[in-house]
Length: 282
Image (cartoon, rainbow, N blue to C red; front, side, top):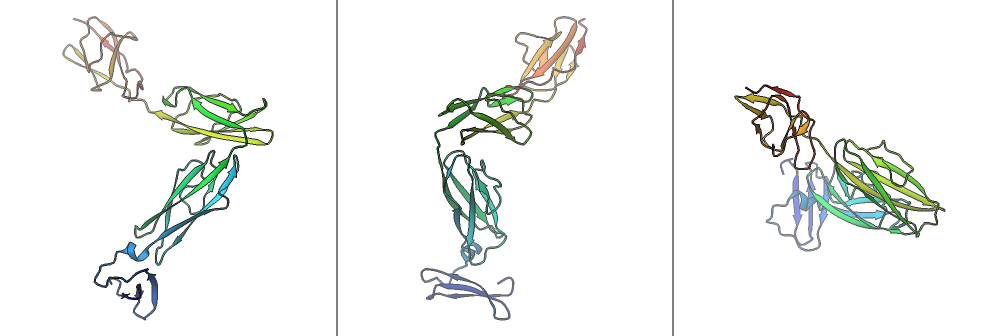
């Protein structure tokens, strides 16, 4: 082997193991059937990692949490990296044992990858039992442009008429006790709602996607034409008012005055108006 050790295959015994220069066995792979000797074994064949996924409880009430755990059984795998999905409801998606608090019944999948690049996957389903109180979260617009305001909405069922609302967010910074608050996020943000009533809890969440604005354009002059710095998405203005059908990169002004241009991208997000360009018609 490249490290100077000896790889030994006992074909009929279904065993492969590595021995160092002192004759010490470093690891052992035990197969279930005779192993061909004339074969180049890959690192992942030798490591043969298997993910065993468990939970402290696989059935919880809404608002409760459970501890997930991924144990790797392998002959030689080291330096394990973990990736859990979905990440919503997890305390940390890159550790072996995150805490899960799903709002609804959820199947979690974990991929464990060794330092040699060998991967294995395991899954577990956490059943969330309803207590009769349920909430459904939505938004007037779940995709907005930077600077826009949208409203979160909560639809509650199974309530006796005296619920308490608790909104939080990730990234952190938003808190509200209103059932339908207005929000103005600056980046993609998860909003979490926890409703409690008479000891019962209902949970739900929503992702608000925030699209950036196009860069502020600028105007130059070429001969008798005004030219936008953007190739597409242009809207020209004259004294702050949009000019009908003036959507080209180029504008032929018809009169002396102050012109500006704005960019609207494929997401419908509009840039800041360009600085005014004072045009003198000759």
